[in-house]
Length: 147
Image 1 (cartoon, one colour):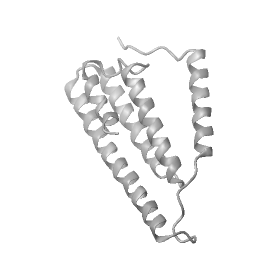
Image 2 (image 1 turned 60 degrees about the vertical axis):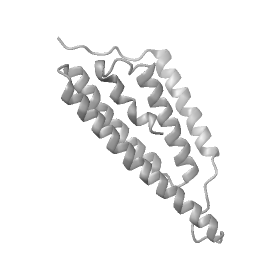
Image 3 (image 1 turned 120 degrees about the vertical axis):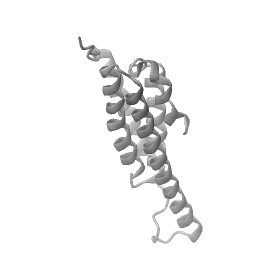
């Protein structure tokens, strides 16, 4: 017998849509750091490069941590639902974080990563994903606590 989660309610879809619109509005209002080579000071160019490097390092660390945690969950469970949830988490989270970190405007990338991390933390601690990993739930919160 397979256990399937019920489809999201209309209120949940509406709330998610409103949250997405809010995030898009915030991101569109963000200011980018200067683009190297367009007349800004050497210090500003160096700051922009340093932030880009930090975003890339965070993305690598996040992906490694999610990959390891998801693999540990799959290896430690006999419940196929939990195994599927951990693989789906890995398949969703890693590309999303990479896309956010590669945004052209570094301020938007930083804000997007923070919002995504906070949302993931909420979903797996209190929201709809709270039971997704069964007894292995503790492993799934490691990547978000690294932020």
